[in-house]
Length: 225
Ligand SMILES: [Zn+2]
Image 1 (cartoon, rainbow, N blue to C red):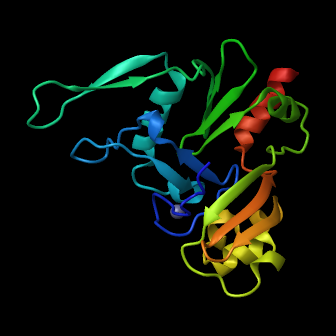
Image 2 (image 1 turned 90 degrees about the horizontal axis):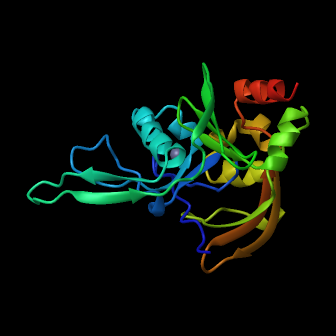
């Protein structure tokens, strides 16, 4: 897997991939930038805190709903000066069953598994595996699976990064606010693994215990009882 380019598609500042705090729109999703006048696609990583206040968040959310929660289908895009429309194919992700349409989020279920997709009305989206759903149902401390991430540091960070905790890393990069400030940093289980000085690639393991909208956690807990 290629390292993250370390850039937020919304604010264009340093991004550190962290579950529940950062989203990734892969090019394969064929998400249209419907807020632009000329036909184009949108992809990349973004801070969820940027997304929640982004003027185009509702447009992006509508696209994500179409991509992630509808059956396989094709859409035709009219391209200026070209007669035939450009056809985009979207394959089903399986989350076609809306289970909750609330004040802050919608929750979609899959047909053959207990996995869930939660999409905030302001855009951020979260996939819950069967075991994660069970944890939420039981009211247990939510914990994402630990993942190893590699990220390019767009600017050098002063000091010995190997000895820094997560708060120190994001603070030094000037993006601490995008991860909830000190309260958010404490909820992020970060472990330094390696740093390639020449390539400025930081490798770390990360898991996190917060981020699911309260409404979603409450509703999912009620479904069990
Ligand atoms: Zn951002």
